[in-house]
Image (cartoon, rainbow, N blue to C red; front, side, top):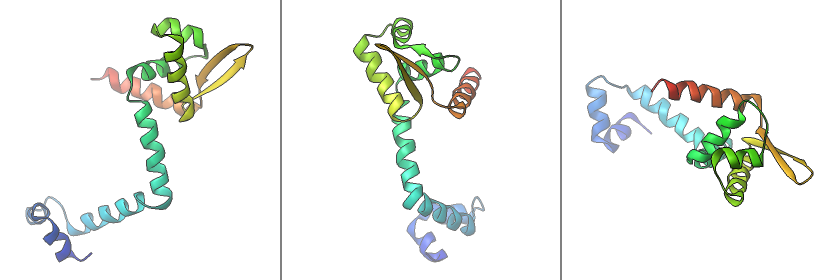
Length: 134
């Protein structure tokens, strides 16, 4: 897309360029990056991230991740700590497992859950620190 086409598409963009708040090259660069994100592997990554953020849109699931950041827990511990019914706890755990945030281990009739990876644990800890600053 030419510079004049970009400017003609949006009057607000032309004002931003005229006021020196952004440049045509920065807009072109952002457009190229957005095109990469919305196609091929970039789009697949966005879909995966969208699923993860949807799962994390529930405070109970976030609290469960925080509980699991320090140690593996039996589903009965999670149910008691969170005051959740068995079906609700199972649904939440299945959602967290499906997007790869937790892993499940069975021992007899009991299910034990843990954070799936050290990267996930690090992310949860980092978000806790960030949340405490607010």
